[in-house]
Length: 375
Ligand code: FUB
Image (tube, rainbow, N blue to C red; front, top):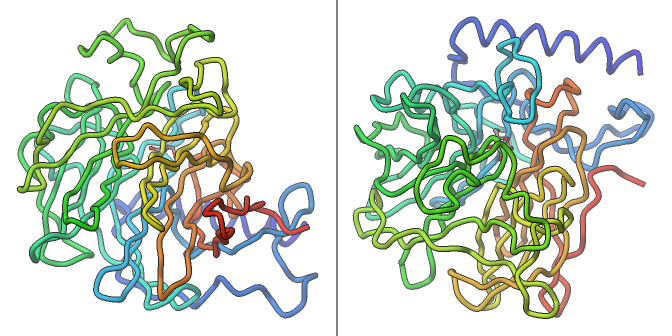
């Protein structure tokens, strides 16, 4: 316990310094740090004494919301870059005051992690003002696309896109956000036929509830629809146009259904969509993973089409240390992995660490729920 307190303080000081220098960490390789120490008593413990399922990929900077992809046989993680701006926690996520992105790369799960230089700073995005929240990436025809949310100059969340010839950037942003996009937490899924889809949305600080009529209503509330017995707000999905920079169609609801085939209700906080959409395909099924927000689960729902509807199926991850839960699922050399985050190094909601752990599918395609702490 004493070790963890001392380490946290040192880590927080390093983070502060990184924040002051604009977060421009040099390219930097960290040791393979997913392996547990040989002696269990040396392992880091949570404030209540539990051992963590996995260790942070990076220990001297903070990265959250990890969107993992395998490009050319190598793993690239597109995370948020957490910094401490001294902003107190609130329900709108004001404490998540990030301003740039850095890409993590590694040759294999558990291998050394390279922290690449700043890939995009909001200062380089003409339309954006603040809040470089959870990003994602895609590759098509020799170009890498970084999709990122940020508030525009009017304080409305939009989704931007930036391009690069390298998976780690630097990325050049388009001068305008993606037309017709709103809210946050973009995730791009490319199907086997080459067609890509953009998923997005998040309630509370993510502003999805303010778009309930299809138009932005600044008075549309800070939480949800406040109609617990009505269908919950849905995350959104749209097909991307061939240019990967625009929507081929208007956003539509990615509906989550319960066991009776009815939409999950707004009051069902254990199962309703909150934020952090992620799509992957396995065995011909479309898996829609998302965070339940204030109940802190990574849940999943399964469908027959990238548009859904998706039948609620279960949990992928029980609550981690820290308020938010956000992750991605990827396949590497025939095994499946979950990238996720927690607050192991700081115990502060806005200074999170990305982690990777293996995922197990049962023969029927359901997923064994992971616990973020060891028994
Ligand atoms: O990192 C900022 C926000 O916190 C993300 O966009 C959400 O998904 C939550 O993880």
